[in-house]
Amino acid sequence: MTTFHEQEHLNSLFQNATEGIIITDSRGKIMLVNPAAERMFDYSTDEIKDQPIEILIPQKIRSHHQQLREGFYQNPSNRAMGHNRDLYGSRKDGTNLPVEVSLSHYNKEGEIFVIAFIVDITGRKEIENNMRKQQAELERVTREVRMLNADLEMKVEERTLILREALQKLEQSQVELSESLDKEKQLSEIKSRFVSMASHEFRTPLTAVLSSASLLGKYTVTEEQDKRDRHINKIKGSVKHLNDLLEDFLSLGKLDEGKVISQRTEFNLKECMEDVIEELKPLMKANQQLLPEYIAASEIITDKRLLRNIIINLVSNAIKFSEENEVIVIRCEKVSEGTRITIKDQGIGISNEDQQHLFSSFFRAANALNIQGTGLGLHIVKRYADLIGATIKLESELNLGTTVSLTLPNIQTI
Image 1 (cartoon, one colour):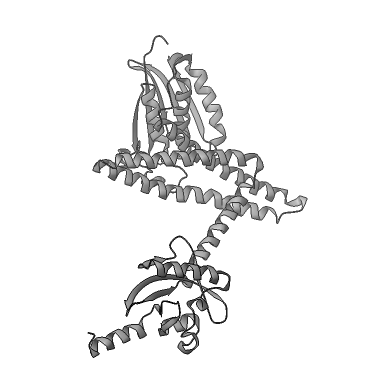
Image 2: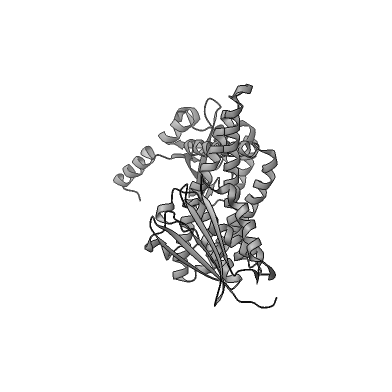
């Protein structure tokens, strides 16, 4: 038997609960309503007492709700309602409000009574709607970026799909390697570096594209052609940077999948190097020089495509991390171990502390964080060198430059 004090506590709980509480009898008629439910539906107790519970249900689903209610009374059980679907109540003025409902029941003198606990989730729904609007706005901006240059749109989309596949494979590798604690820590660090790099490297060119595209529309007369050309060049440069990022991810993905296979051919090293130097001239800063030196280096046997990729990456780095008016020496020579290609610059150099991490994926030296790059270049170079059996050595000093040596083994026949 409930004591007087217990009854007081139960009554206080009913009156002061922040959730709406409604009790109905076996016919679905409202017996009790607490203040929270009155405020929620804008009814007083006198207005809805002895009314069917359907008075608080939106008009269009009242008949269906009556069928559900009757089914509940036939097989009553405690349950939560609304998971994976929206539930709505109806206020006195006919407006709807989103709710979550939990039902419980009890028997008294042979009659079933149902207790409904009701939570108004209007605030949560507003947050979800705002999130959907923000997502829609983000998708709209993304579409506008893709429409800026019709000729490049297909290529960017293709590279984006390839990047997504590479990232999915990276995530799968993370799950497999997580069995080892050391590997798990390593993957966590790689992921952190990637997120940091991607958020910066992708946002900067996209912002430049959007800004220049918006400004293009302001220059409409012939005399402003130079201003239009300047913004068009900014857009082209930003898109090229995005494409370079995607190419790095593509190369890494192919290496991880084992799709890069070394194929040896015989070719003239000097001719190959001259082609590479000519290809890289547009990247050079004002008055920079690429100075080739060929010492007893002629015909060699190795994978020409992979060697070109290695040299392009190393020389591009030398150009990027060197100032204007500086000379970059490219030396090709025969040594006892085989053929050695050395790239020497007078650029910003690399600290001793950073040098031990240079061939790791996503690593950026501390003094190069404000220079564009993915942190994948030297990692890919090292893996290409391993595929063709070459060794790579790096020597550097801060503010005095860097020397990278690639030694190809002696191979007499294909």
